[in-house]
Image (cartoon, rainbow, N blue to C red; front, side, top):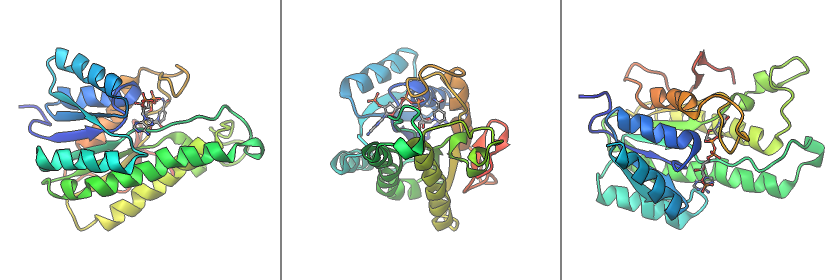
Length: 243
Ligand SMILES: NC(=O)c1ccc[n+]([C@@H]2O[C@H](COP(=O)([O-])OP(=O)(O)OC[C@H]3O[C@@H](n4cnc5c(N)ncnc54)[C@H](OP(=O)(O)O)[C@@H]3O)[C@@H](O)[C@H]2O)c1
């Protein structure tokens, strides 16, 4: 029996990039994985590919900016397995193109927060009863080193070069949201952590970085942490990342 045998997981934005590799990794570990995607054709194709590898993966339609779609997805899980052991809030966008904050488009800022922050909160709220119904629910929020105020502040900071006001600040909000949910759930069996996958070669990063499967491993590790594991932290493959 593998580590995740019998567990039910949902990964939002699972049709490509790091999300797809998280779905694959959790399914390889033995979980039944619901591959969340907003585009039915892309979702079916991705799930079909993984089923072709012998993995237990089903497409679940979910657009994280659409309340009705989130509600339908939650109902489907409720009427199906009736619980959720793992939620990976992976779906995100980064529509800016390296402009300084003084020239950033406020509409892009709004759209980015709509997906990366408000969408994540809405999905988490909708799925929480199902996570509470699991013996040890796990929530993993995909963050980034670019969300870290310490790693981005000042001339000498490693990521001070990054001109992504909307994306970086939305992910700093994701870190704060992670802490808030973790605090609320301290007396429950549900653990909530944020994952920094590092720079991975996907559409979001313009193909720069390491293989997405390597970034996915960070999130998979947090999705499968034991009862003695942390909650309310941000972790990369070198351990805890400073806020
Ligand atoms: N790549 C990196 O270097 C890197 C580094 C640090 C953190 N991350 C984080 O890792 C996660 C995955 O990023 P990635 O690089 O794999 O990005 P990606 O290849 O662009 O994939 C993003 C996924 O999110 C989905 N998505 C976007 N908006 C959505 C919505 N409203 N509803 C549902 N799904 C939606 C996309 O669906 P469509 O295919 O329909 O657009 C796609 O499946 C993100 O949270 C990102 O911030 C990435």
